[in-house]
Image 1: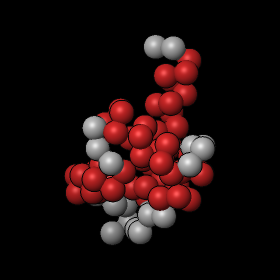
Image 2: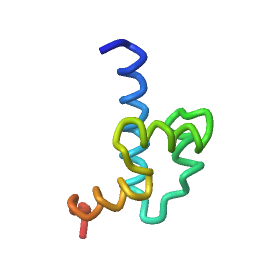
Image 3: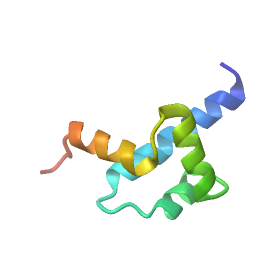
Length: 70
């Protein structure tokens, strides 16, 4: 794996963590906090690596991952 690919995956993982932690995610804020240039670029990266858009992937992850503190 190249350093660039590693950095892209790390940034995507950060965005996924932020999105799954939020009750009502603000996608533009998540994109900025994760280090993306803009929300559209983040969406492209999600599709490239997961084949899904951010809301679809978040929905799938939230369904299978129980929240702590409930």
